[in-house]
Length: 243
Image 1: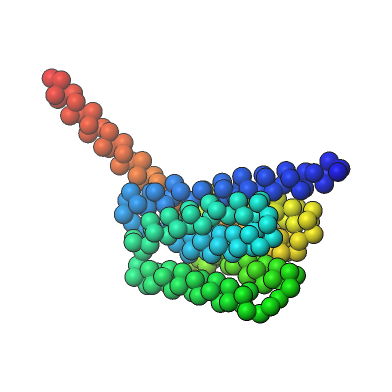
Image 2: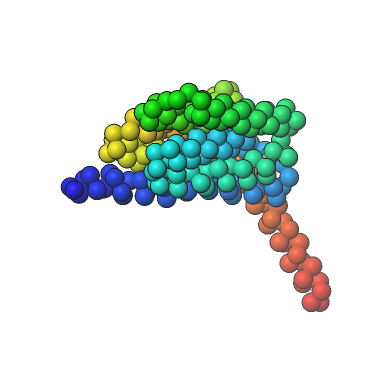
């Protein structure tokens, strides 16, 4: 086996699995901040619901093709996505809560329907691979496009606070690595969506650079000022007690 083939067959999916975890864990700080301040702010919950769907789709595909790289890299997507949605949804508006509930119900119905087709259609191995691969690709497309659901708001306000840059950067690297692994395994269900997904993430990141996150920066500035004031008050109390 040539070094290039070994790199694409083993190094790329291994790095892809690591970067996928980094991608899925990247919103953790923002989610914990939402839970701490008890306000959703500019955090968009829809990518978290798409993360759950993406994890379920690729877990199913990885199981079907017996690929440990595909399966293992998406366990964290499912678990972290569930954690994010359950954490931030309680602080969202009622309309958003209803939307998240409907998305998760629709996702369950989709997998039930695909499972029934898988059991009853009598497809051969190639047909079953296409069935689960197409399902995973469709869901992955939603996951990559989900950060653009706030694009109209970003362009209108000229503020990219609702686009989370660390997650976008991780999306780009993750897409490119799985694109390379798809080339090595000749799997178009990995090649096509990850290549397109990386392009969408580049577009989202470019938009975030064009329109700085002014609201988020202003909020962080206010939080720092509040913390400094609280520390100053504590210091003055300490000096009074000492006196």
